[in-house]
Image (cartoon, rainbow, N blue to C red; front, side, top):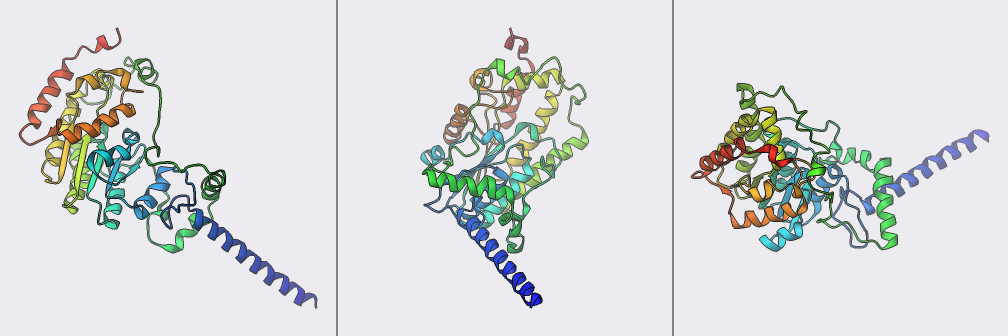
Length: 353
């Protein structure tokens, strides 16, 4: 008798556990905080956060024909402005601190899944050219979210961080009637800008002194492989998609850091190689804003020597639309020479007087 009761109790426990796990799976499926299973439901409020969790689900399930991408330099773009200016339906997919490889792989997945995707706006971090092609900032990724293997979805469904930070947050927002995070707000930031804030993270008297002044043979190889593998090959793979690429317009303090390091010529040589490779792709439109000195030299627009305010992101979209800063085969050498003359001879001490 006792043995039968024990068996019955064990069976009941197994059934109860199965029911509990089924309920958890159902809740995660419905509120799906990272859009792994489906597009957003109209009756659920979503908090868009954690780019490396959200982005794959967004490009997998959302409706769009354009993507704005890049690192933190692109986080303040407003897809609504892209839609208004270019007549598109845009999503934003940024990856803070990413290398070209991570951004390229995400775009490749999106382009494979969405035949309507015909426009890419991509900010190429200017200081990321001289890196190995496979360079990555992060080693631990939620790769189980990037594939089509349903069996490893267990790592998503029964994940305490997904449940606590994602599902419960969405449930609370839904109950309170809060609005979902908009695509404009997603990953955006609003920080104080100005020279005094730049100097909180930049000490021009304490810069690296080991950087070579010119591009070495190995570094030249890095640039060629980095640009070719992660950008040129992607553009050639999808010839019907237009890639609007731009070098991120860092502040005059960034150029000062190159001057202090003695590495400016090295960076300009990398830019030359990158530009020549990109210009060989007919579906790439490359933009360079380094001769817009009203922006570059206005430290009020920057929170550190690289990161510009949302105002600059907005201007970039308008500049690209007008083609005023378009780099072409017949002007890239002239533009690069002007860049060399200006930044090599600039009075950097005057910034801080």
